[in-house]
Image 1: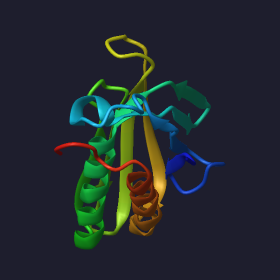
Image 2: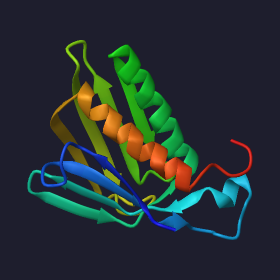
Image 3: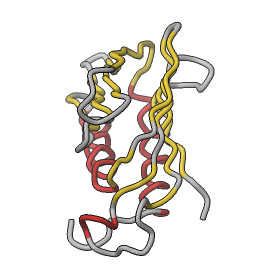
Image 4: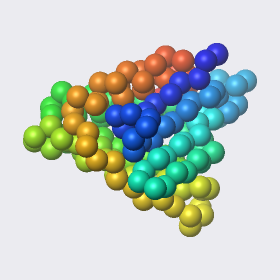
Length: 149
């Protein structure tokens, strides 16, 4: 099965966060708790910094982020957060009345460790939300939530 790519930012040549969803961590599991972990390395390129985090995100974390982004896009206000259970990534997309977006976040290189990178991505607006939502939908179609959730 092909992997999914989620790009938060306008262009992979500019400041961005790239989440590659490679597959399920426990492919034989179909229950909610074990079956929904995804092997999902995170790549961050902001300013002069580059980071690669061997993260594990959960399907419902990506789903909840998509739902919040859809609301933000429809209302042209509010915020959407991607918050990882194990604190690999904390990211907030805030939409202002003008339609401009503020994106801020933190990535950690290992759960419970002190090494983090705080970042801001600028220059985006509400027109950048639909491609992000489409990428999240594609990831959900490839890796739907298993079990309850």
